[in-house]
Length: 493
Image (cartoon, rainbow, N blue to C red; front, side):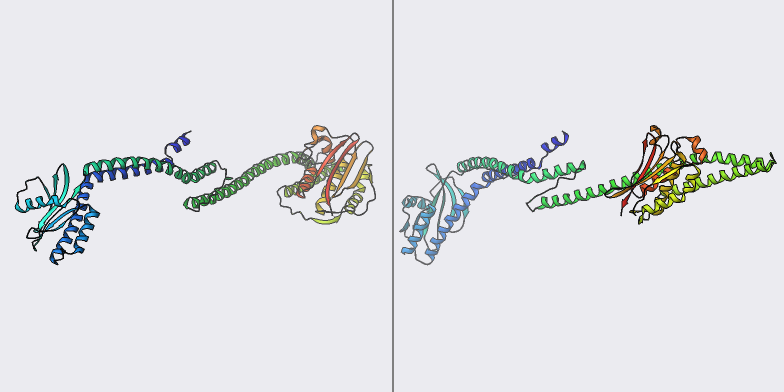
């Protein structure tokens, strides 16, 4: 509301109109003032100039002795007709040389009276010389501008022209000027109002665009076609809008990256804390066992060779478990922090799985497990062969460790249109539903006692998760009534 009120009160359109009306009124007032002060004087001067022109004609004719010619009379007739001047001219013998037809005879007595100095009237002398006098006189209620004199050649003359009421003329002129001034001011005000509207319309448009820019809306663009200074300003605002949008986008991108870096740092800190806590927890038991059995050996608690051998086997076994866990943790650490390069290559998945199953045959026979895998043609896929083998190893060892019931492990390679899915199924107890979402977390164990029994660290499935995500491929687990199936997918080559 405040911004709208400001624009309504101080709009350029209104200021233009007020300034124009003010200038028009000032011009009218100035003309009115000049009329009052100088119009009468200017009028008298103009009349005086006309009389002086007639005087020059008479003087030149007298000097050249041509006042008896028809040319002289025609020239004076023209002056009298054009300028409304009455003229009477006589020579030194009082003989008439020229009388204007518009009442020149009436001036004979006045000329005689002037020459003999017997005319007593109040006059206002305007211009005077040795040969003439120009004065303003009143006769019969009217005002005249009169000139009389005697030339060196003996020619005497008198002429006069009526002077209308200057004051009345000024009043009429000023009244007329006032009417015209008011009408012109009103018409000009309306015209300037519309013109100012056209001028201020693009300015208001620029204001609307700038208000949107304040609220970080850069969609609106100025599109003027006048090719003037306002259009130039509009083009610069468009450039400013684009520049601001680009800068804000870059800032948001940088801010987003910074936020991600902060989140990643916090995540790394949490992972570090969790890692230390889990490692400490996982290593605490084997270290305690190693320490206990080592102290027993050093103190000679049991000198029986069989007991000593058992003590040593426990120490070696626990040390081996610790070594395996540390190796897996190092592998997982490299995967999670992106320090391990993924080498995408084309390889035979069938051969990889088959070779690993054959290498683990001793382990399955020891545990009385039957492994089933159909014969497959070579199936070529894209992936990191070493890491895929790591996934197969973790799935297979996990199946061996949790195999129960009929003691069977079934491996399938299912070909789809664009990918191949590897299934590793083992019979046994299904995974509790509440544990499925946590299987891929580091050090998570569904059955801690059993995991401890076969030496599991709870890191294997975390390694699977990190490997599959590094190759951007899917993986998962499914429960069945008689067992559990782990699977992963690879792109078909």
